Amino acid sequence: MPGLMQPSRSDVHVNAMLTDVTVAYIQEAKAYVADRAFANIPVQHESNRYFVYSRADFFRNQVKERAPSTESAGGGWNLDSTPSYSAKEYGLHKDIDDRVRNNSDAAIDMDRDATEFLAQQALIARESTWAAAFFKTGVWGTDVSVTTKWDQASSHPVVDVRLGKRTILSKTGKMPNVLIVGRDTFDVLCDHVDVVGRFDRGQTSGIALANAQTLAALFGLDEVLVMDSVQNTANQGATEATGFIATAKSALLIFRENNPGIMKPSAGYTFSVTSQGGAGPSGQRIFKFRMDEFKSDRIEIEMFYDQKLVASELGYFMTVLT
Image (cartoon, rainbow, N blue to C red; front, side, top):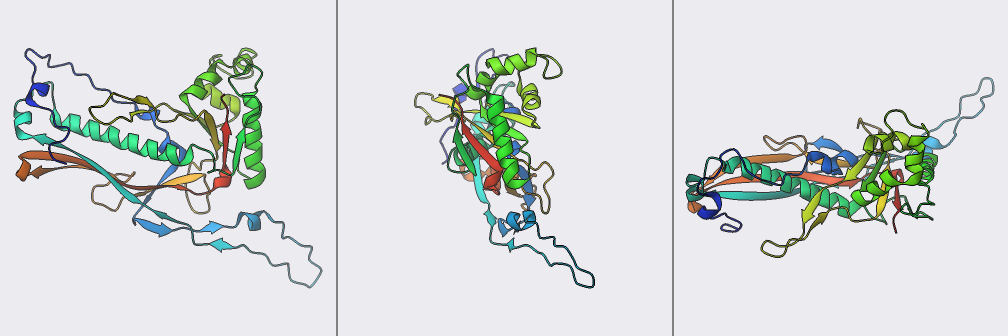
């Protein structure tokens, strides 16, 4: 609504303000994992269907011995055309009042600041939506609570991840390639005696240091994604309540298709509508227009997307901390 969250003139003008120093809390893009967990699929329509080939039919051995002068056995598969996506529009704007703009110091670039603010808001929204929908139990093909939690010295994270990989591979023929964890779980892994011991004993190449890259190598994965993004869940004016978006003491193992295409399953895809003029590959648009009735410029971001679970059997969700 107009008038909300607008800085006053005293907020943007400070006597003898340094012109080359400002402070803003902008999170790095790598803190967000939603678009790296579910590969992005640019689409033209807000909703549509897609085909799912029968996994059972493709894995069934239908080959038969053929006798002389007889035809070969026939085979085939079922095709499900009912799965669909339905993209929703998300948006936020920031108004810049003429008087505020005209009275701002050189260190304040209102258009730049509004654009950065809206871009981060969009990433937070995308991440929190993904975490709430998919980083939890009751979604994936397998939910397990590991017998000995990873914050116990006697646990075996490598063995637990290997079991998850084997479970998905045995059901789908796809080897999981991505592990997604929160910061709590990641820190536990980095300090775990078994993990550190495997590095020290030379079971991995390179520096004997636990980080996302070396953990991926240790687990035999393409990538370990750490959900480092944070959000403030308090209303404006209330006491700040900032914390990690991912709070589950868990780890999600998935198969992610790195080159999406026809007949290529993946745990999930993000369908992003790019048919709107000027939309980026993730369905996002940022534009500026005049609001004469409020004597302000409006900068607005909008996004069209659907984060879609495609193959639940390609996910293995583990509760790993006490």
